[in-house]
Picture 1 (tube, rainbow, N blue to C red):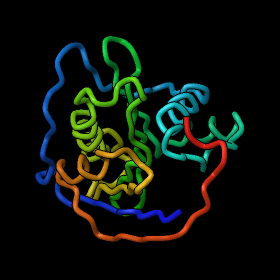
Picture 2: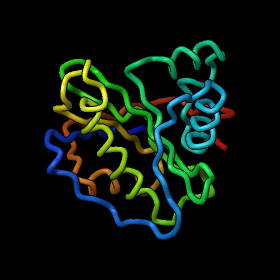
Picture 3: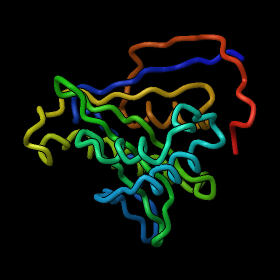
Length: 180
């Protein structure tokens, strides 16, 4: 199967074009004590339909190490108290912040939450340096997405002001048992 991967970035918080505010009781909250089980739940539930497989073999200890990493933050979107999606941010050298994972749980797709959640994730990426005085101020926010991701993922990233800086295409085998 041919997979195209797009790398997108923003180098100025003023480039952010906010998505529309959702109706109802929707909150974007940092998981300040993100246990390994919760992190695995978010990853597998959001990524199950998109062949997110890199962390599938991780042990509980590997998940524990990831969520304990002081450079990593997990942010969860809640709709009326129910987890609806999440973003994992990682502070990197020289003021870069990667949106490592981002997505909605299957039952929350198509409800207009993705643009709002991405807006909030990008805001948290830009202000990560103010929450973490030991880190450099954010100078660049970046992420990548691929042709296996949701139908609206790339359009959402671009609509929020992220711009492509690299694109790759490669052949990859179809992974049996991946997907939801």
